[in-house]
Image (cartoon, rainbow, N blue to C red):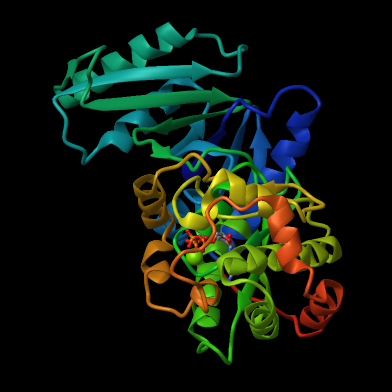
Length: 386
Ligand code: ATP
Ligand code: MG
């Protein structure tokens, strides 16, 4: 008998030709995530992934890390045993020792259809054995202890506790995006939502030093460190934005400033995206949350886009986003004080519904291409370790 984790993934995305691609990526991600936790092997078995453990493996660390691997629906710590009824009965009784319960149920999933007994027969036989030896009662509807037996390939696995996985698709199956990360609450959540759909996220941050201090840079590094535990990639591009802001402030009408900042950010981000082969930009915008996030303004920003700008939070309420940030682990970092480049030199009454023509006209005084090139020259690339 040995202990294992048995990992189940969702059905979505598994169908047809993609199945093997999906599974291989998931296994690769699990290997990366479980480094140094003491597993011996991660391998695919019929419709599941098996993680075998050394006796000294850090079970709690593995449990925590598996909870952060996108694409896993649920996973269980199980004991693996020989595929015969005597071994299964003995192992099941052993596995439930020390647990407190008055009622129990046995539930068998038989992936190996060659096993001589059917699932109901196994349930009945193992159930009778457990009841006799524990004094518990059977309860088919609401048991205090559910003992699951999976008969797969040439072994049997027994478990009693289910862990919820993150769901979604394995990071890497959907390509790459460049996330515009501000240091606020929303953009890290937007990154997480995209990772959950299988994309690898790389980050870009614009900062206004020396007009602001460097606190936003430190926050962004910390945010990327947390996000990298879900994503296995901590690449972040830091873009000096002060010179561009100075130009905008001296040469354009005040009400359009935030929009013009954003248009410049998008232009620069797109260039970085091209160098890292990212196929879309991602922002944390949520419709109507602030003055710059009206449909009209989104359109005025999108006007300069040459690649898709994805906004996974567009329909979310602030409360939902904050709740999610808490569960991802970014909320505490995001709410630390920092000096935000976008609130710099911003008028009391920014344009909330600018026409594209007006915004383009306001930009006419800027040497857009030269400003973009200059900012790109100052970009620094960092890799933050999870
Ligand atoms: P967040 O909580 O992510 O800061 P927000 O609600 O404060 O978002 P805005 O400040 O309007 O919204 O920014 C909208 C989006 O623009 C952000 O979610 C982010 O994707 C991007 N963005 C804003 N400022 C920066 C920045 N300094 N660097 C990179 N991206 C930024
Ligand atoms: Mg912000």
